[in-house]
Length: 290
Image (tube, rainbow, N blue to C red; front, side, top):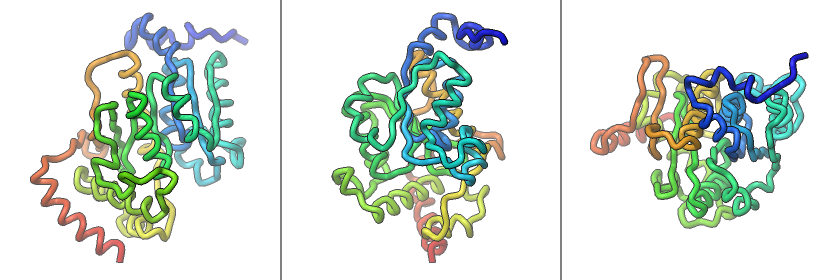
């Protein structure tokens, strides 16, 4: 059996990154709470790109329904903790990885975690934990990469000076201690995010709106699809690499949607147009929820 070497693993990266840049990736550390869907896809891409150090966390176990999209979900990881399973499989790709695995205690350890990482990625869909994470990233001057709850792959890059998602979309969590964020607040946050997605993208064209209405009303779980999840996670990984290497370009805190159906990137629309479209979207969402 051929012995593993990092240099041979990353040899085909040359041409995209220099030897010096590859070494920067090897020595970088990235934090990813939530390594199921998009967080897991970002983790996988970054492992294969040669990032050498990670802190990962997840409070869930893999389920059979995760097999449709979560890259670390396999027959042998069902009913096993996601973070531990993702760590084990990542080490099968690069046995030299340095990975710190956390459970639900990650929210209490952000003051210790964030000063040690180069980039933070959000793979969790918990409103309370997410609000706490965003706030701590600002406090510790760390850039946070995230994505919208959208049928189209998306990505945002929120720098320390940028408005938090809860500020920008006027979530009911503003000014509320994260431990006091209720389930009802979380639902309202999701509704505001869905509204933003419908206003600023053509997402409504590519999903079953009846099922979307059931999700919004809490009558069924969120739906998701392999290509969307994998593309979004890869977009997140690409932005993380850009930040680690100090490369110019990339997106901003508003992000963008990647529409593979129409072969275009969809950027947030201008405020006057968004205002008019938002009125229509709100009427549509009201009908959808009844």
